[in-house]
Image (cartoon, rainbow, N blue to C red; front, top):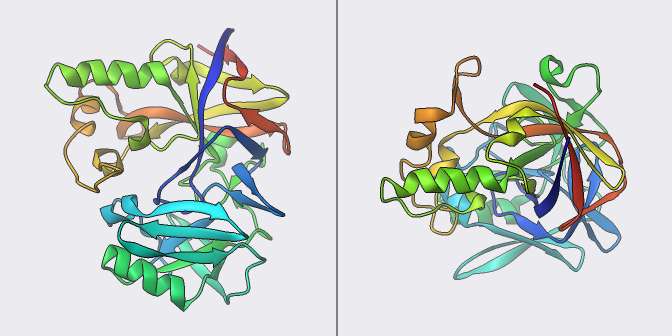
Length: 285
């Protein structure tokens, strides 16, 4: 057992768009959320799709990194430098129900309308639409890793919480420095929870993280994609950190490089996490 602390909390209301750093986050089985008046805005509650309904991310459209997301006055606000913002109501979805595809799952969602679709199409120079997860359904996490926990998520790739240790990024940046590569910020990896006080890559061996009545169970390494090579401030794409990670973090069984760990919520639904809170970390070896 080891003790760490929460260094950062983030939610990403729109999959693959900008995140929102939080001092406190509400915990639900489906992941973290923030309070917005009478509403709660959840992690990956919205997603951008092709007109066919298939999801798109920064993998295909790196300009999505430039779309900033904020919340206020009963609306989700999307903004882009030099472009008037677009607001999407947080009221109960009124748009038509549609079926959309995220990885191997086909799920029900609600279309957010033509205005935001036109705004996003201009923003990324590609025909897309915005949809909102239908909360009346459950998108189950892979039982191969989540077991019979009943864990489910919304439009996240597969699991409700992504955990990374700050020391792991520090170690990666020290390796990149030997190649003359500038240090990368944590936002390249889009974590929900950053832990301070663990040794580098200790999160690989975590079993549970317990904080103020909330228990997260760590279930699967996160294999990383080309999004990590996309500068979140400019949308410029390079080769790092994937090239460096490939030299020492390749996971043969998962056929990819790993950085960070996926977790599910096993206790504490409805409670809150706070930056600075102490976390009791149990390991499995």
